[in-house]
Length: 374
Image (cartoon, rainbow, N blue to C red; front, top):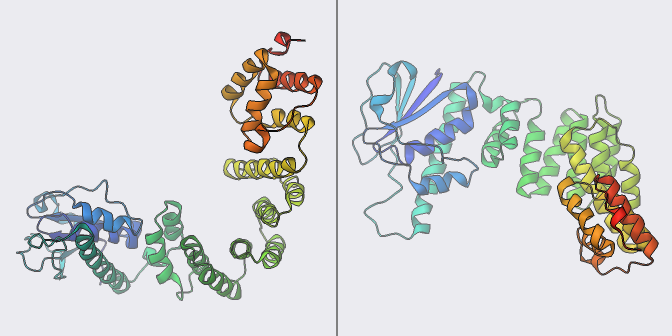
């Protein structure tokens, strides 16, 4: 069956056709134009919104549309979803399918919200299965076999959409199919399935990305030696993004309770990190320093603390003003930013306090040091 656009119809364009539109967009991506409408449009049913949200698909921006407002020239296939009602009439030469589905709202029945939602889930899953079958019938270059569409779904946080892609990608021979399946399983918390998918992908065609993913999964499973070995394979692979793998290896060292090793690995990262990786690396750096400092905390470490806490210029400029009145209090406040264990630390010696307040002043261009009390 060939079509480039599809229109889903029911009476109110409230539940069945709205869920079908959301599911079709999820499965077909940009390859098919998807619309929905009704003969007596009302509003998007809140239970339809809830049922679809469970799959990571948002209907929040959807609105009920009249079939009269749909241009027949934009439709190749019409699918009606009515069962007990009279289906809308659509004038046009499009192909037609009829999927008789009972209205999940069950307006005539006295139901609790949870009971009503259960009927919406049943209708949603029925429609999803039908659209998946339709995608297979359509053939051609659909996003069902499109690795980038699956990655986009993951990037948008639409785990349900990504899972649909993953289920249909595995076994197709599409590059990256097992990687997507492993990522979805990992995010769902099914680490055994994630590891199995990653291993299948590595047997089919090892890449540095798969080795890195395998390492991340093994790390999540607590299999640290296996994770480290996988990262080693990733670093030895062609085209590897070394900084990404090294960051994950540093994270592994921190998880193993080896913050010094983690810091040593972080020191090997390049100077041209992208913003996301740089932020993650900085957070890991601070976390490891906190761990080490909590083991050997003294006034000298508090001095280092002042130099490191530079994430918010305005916030710490205010800290410097506090230092002008009470450098000891400024250090205590700064210490609190790294956790309660630092707030209770002893501050030994006025010299360290003055040095720290001066450093705070220098970092944030506030001349607090000249106000210090001898």
